[in-house]
Length: 210
Image (cartoon, rainbow, N blue to C red; front, side, top):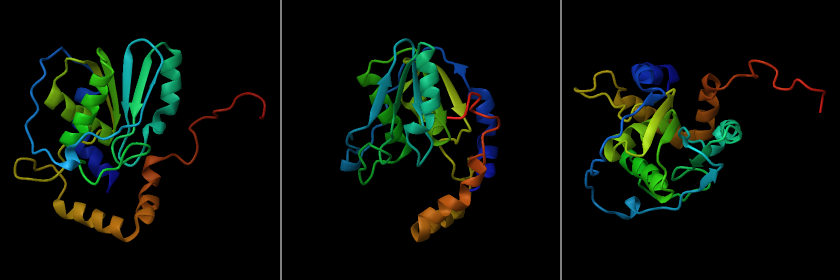
């Protein structure tokens, strides 16, 4: 999917929400949905390192928490508690046959926060991780959350509809899914370039050659 198109849709939200302090709000009861095997709790691989005020990192779609490893090391050394997890279907977490709707993913985040009794949390998300943060706040409130930081966010609802005229046409989603079914590695290779630099913007090693 075209990255620029996605960022145009979400650009306004990035300015308004990035690293925005949140006043404590009462949690709202999540909308009920039918209980199915797909919605049952799954085992999530979670890392929980350091002490201090917690920062919870959420990765983008198709990537694991390891994408944040440099930030993890930095904030642990700075005196923070760093928590991150692989979302369901990713990395070392369980891979159920369903339950990948945004409500369930937001509920998985809620479970991670509740099981560790995390409060005064800063939630940091990238791309799809931002969608999970926004939907979490809508479903569970901000009583556990102090701040959020949304990096290159994708909004929770992308489909173009009469009441969401700036969304993405459904035909584009079907086109992308068809490409995944034919040759997913080729799709990744064809679309990776806008997301990665060919080399670091400055030398990362300033000492003698290893």
